Structures are given as structure tokens and as C-alpha cells.
Length: 136
Image 1 (tube, rainbow, N blue to C red):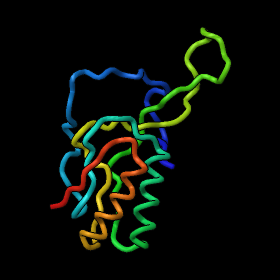
Image 2 (image 1 turned 180 degrees about the vertical axis):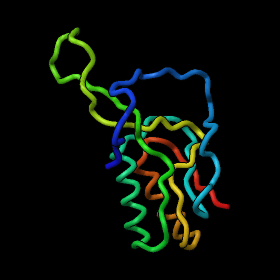
Image 3 (image 1 turned 30 degrees about the vertical axis):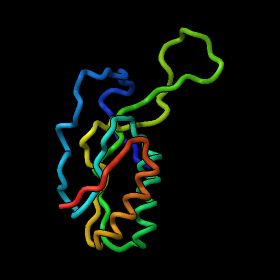
Image 4 (image 1 turned 90 degrees about the horizontal axis):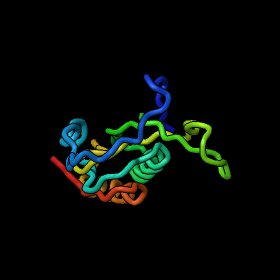
């Protein structure tokens, strides 16, 4: 699964939604001929990205090329169960990527559009965000 090799700060603040409705970066197709674009916002963790990637490559039977346009680099901490309040922040549990509407998540190139559409539709079921199919 995807995890960063090194981060500047081991634990991050959670962050707040600051009325930024849409993503400014990563909103157009760059590498492939078609892809899926997020229409809602959520945190996507590395397990969900890996599950979607395996679904796409399994359906395409290793033909064409898959591009993952997101990388989970935000650490999420978790306290052990049944631990009382106090004692500081918990250890890093997993990494996520905060997705905003408009962000391209996956791109596919080198296959027919109908086959790519079905592969990306199956992958979208593995993700916590609603998506739509986009092509050039």
C-alpha cells in the first residue's frame, strides 16, 4: 500500500473545511485518455486506493496503463481502545488523501473507452467519494 517514505512532521492537525468547495489542482486529464473525477469530498486512505487499483488492473487484464493521480500523505492518528483522556495524541495509524470535488483520481490509457468505463465504474465502488467518468 501507499505510504510516504518521509514526512516533514510526523503528526498533522486534522484541518478544517475553509469554504473551498472545489479542488484547484489535478482537475484535468493529464496522462490517460479517460478517468474518474470526484464529485464529493472525503478522505481516501491507502487501502481504498490499492483496492481500486487492483480492480482496474484485474478487469483490464494488464492491458493498457493505469495512472493513480492521488497519493496519501496526510497522517491520521488513533488512540488505543479503552484509554482514558489525556496522555497526548495517539500514534500514526494510517495515511489519507483529502479529496475535494473536481479532482481526477485515476486515469486509464491504451484500452477502448467502453472497457475503460466499466473498469473505472467498478473501481469507483471501492472509493468513499461519488465519481463520474470523464474522457478527452
